[in-house]
Length: 138
Length: 138
DNA sequence: CCTAATGCCTCTAGCCACTAGAGCTTCAAG
DNA sequence: CTTGAAGCTCTAGTGGCTAGAGGCATTAGG
Image (cartoon, rainbow over all chains, first blue to last red; front, top):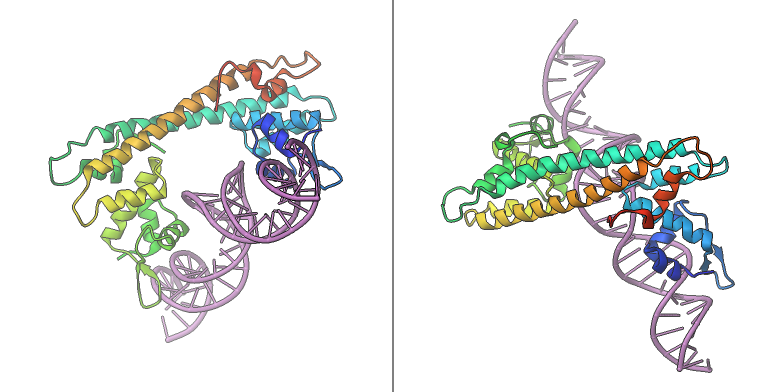
């Protein structure tokens, strides 16, 4: 049985975050010792480890809730899990695509600075004017 | 002079967002007509357009505040603006790099589903177990 | 000129996923 | 037995909005 601090250290999830997860019902309320402190077992450690890894992979807490439910009573629903993972992959790809468009525009804008030329700052102008952009970002 | 709705339509910034920007001091309080409604002029339109475009490029509101200050009384500080743009570019690139690592792992995980094989779901296992990952994400 | 529909006003609360802090109790090492 | 770290609960704040309630202003049509 570990304390919340030990659990935190071995999973990399911060102590207040663990309490927060309990509060919103993502993990079951921990058993308590005589002094009202939370105690965790191996299963609790593994569940939190799962959450941590899924968070690192970019899943939201609600999606993680679903994923954990798939691991539940009726055996494992592998197809559903795979679908959630694919959906997540699509989200990640869409975000990459958007960020690449931003990268392109920001690259262009940072090349505009010819400091000391006087007059109006082309960087500031470009930041404010979408019509100068090469394409659609956002 | 436009109403807040007209300003919203021509910039693409939603009405409550405009009021929010005023509330946090990102834009100056608008002048009001006899019936206490906000009225905007061309300069107000341009300032909001600047904010919108910078937001679309991924700048935070505090960075936008700085950018707008650079456009201020003492002429334009082009070098500072360029630095902010470069910093933003670096942030975007870092986020792209991270998302690409996630993409790699999620691709791998979604290839694990051999539905119907019975037993444990490899997708769920992989989601919970970082040691299976090819590299460091996050 | 009157009415109805739309637009605008303020204010409060909620979203996500935490994070920080106050003020208290419990545990573990020496 | 003392002391300092770690735990507890509770509240409030973060960023950047968004939603809703309940009430005034404007405007287009008849």
